[in-house]
Length: 540
Image (cartoon, rainbow, N blue to C red; front, side, top):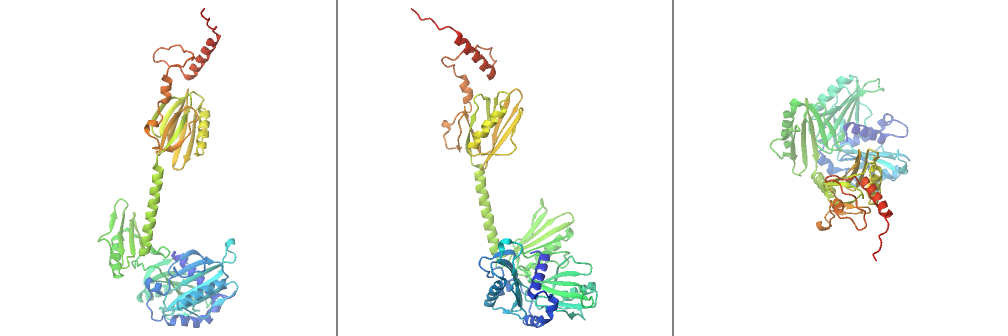
């Protein structure tokens, strides 16, 4: 989950959990002071938890859900959002029972109505907000509820340091608030100084209004938001708001990083830093991560000079993985630190192998040879089979459109799908087909004779059949070579002697050959001559 979304979600859940009727949280907050004290008493001196420590108390990634529930955008260690077919009160009651089974105690100040139910639960200093309300925006989810659980961690918010003179202002179980007469900028600087002294490390900031500051800090697996602004009540004083978010991974960053951005749903920390700091960043992680139980798998980063990248991989005792990737640009180095558990690494490898196997099978299918029999028009001439998947022939001028139409009918019957964009012009024409992993194209160019080219993808082997009606397809190697028709068959047919009763065309000088249409005219004339001759007389 991105940082800005997390801030909005946590704020919205906090509001929903304390909203009663149409009254605002500020109006109800004084009544919650006792709840706040009860929630923080057990965690007064607690150290912010690591993700591993927090998961032992509550892991919302594996927390029980209502049967048939559909997870929404977020399902992390500290946040669960999902929809389920149940009324809000029933949905809330389900979560209450499950938290109670785990040893959580419900804090005073919960709220329930026909449309909304909310409350807070605590265990070992951890505070979990739960809310349920009708699902909206989807007509198919009538009678469904949207359920949200947010674990803020185990930080005692009222024990966080604030500047002198700051007075409590309507605290809640998920937020400590104070007002002060100091200006926002001065207050933000003072809070930052106090938090750094308390061991909190800078972790980026949000882009806020001129009189507002939103700074993030981190300690172990807890991210703290220090939100400084002005309030329209209480004389327009400066308002200090502290809230926390439980992180799924503890990813440190250099204290001088300009704008680190942590995404909890991806467990990834990203930052763009000056290119001159590349070596310093590598040195920071090479020194810091081993202190946290991580060990580099290589002594030095692995570099790719062509891509201008380098990376380091770290593993811990549980075989979890941290990958540090750096990409060099002209003036900046883009840094990404990503966390994966052993289970996630193994699942990623499984998916990668499955994808590779799927691609291998697809490639094998694409390359599988198939034999496609192409019927050669009766008057085709100059046959030239250049490749197994490519041949050419010639027909008389003007025959292009009719021939393409015949091919269209032929291949459509064989299950080929015509690709849009066919042309049937006088001079040029083209038609294309697809079938599974095979492609086929037929085109012609006509200037005093239609020159045809029939081509296909590499997995096609053409078998050329003389005459009409030869239509078949089968694997290329199904028939022995001796049974395959010869590509020269049409030419050999022309060399056969004349049949009995066939008119004789007068001889031509060597090297001279009449066009087919002229031959047809001569044959027709000779037939007429033969028919006009008187029948021979019988010998006595």
